[in-house]
Length: 190
Image (cartoon, rainbow, N blue to C red):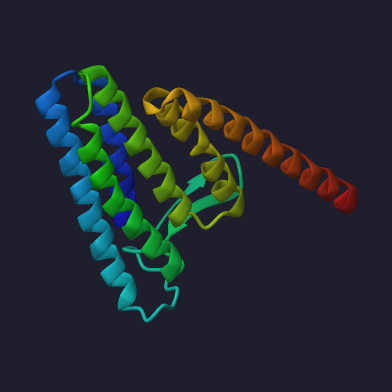
């Protein structure tokens, strides 16, 4: 349940920042939501530590939903201590990143950069809490888009050029690897 609350806080904050054009309110909202996510993540980490590293299906540590018309259940859980530590690191660094973006140049850039940082935090949360390998891959690849946009908006000319090359290299090389994997899967299993 806490995982769902963390994800909803980030989604609602991103949507409100898209709507609200007030600098003071958007800064308070973004900093308070990232602080709340950090507190909830620390509490979730404490709950997980009391389990002695064992994976127990408790309502606090898992969140799952069933997709109708498909026999699939997508679940998000605290499945290992490494992902919990990375989630704590993500939540802690997000506060610093949001604080740094709110002190930048003009309001439109601050708003865009804050939304991109919160989107990266949301995608990282989904990565660290997912228990499905396919969703892990999808969320991992989805992080490249806001990262590229953040570097493209803020970076110097050289960084923008390097970011473009790296983005296309990483994205298309991973796409070829995934296509090859599915081709081999289809050849072996069908």
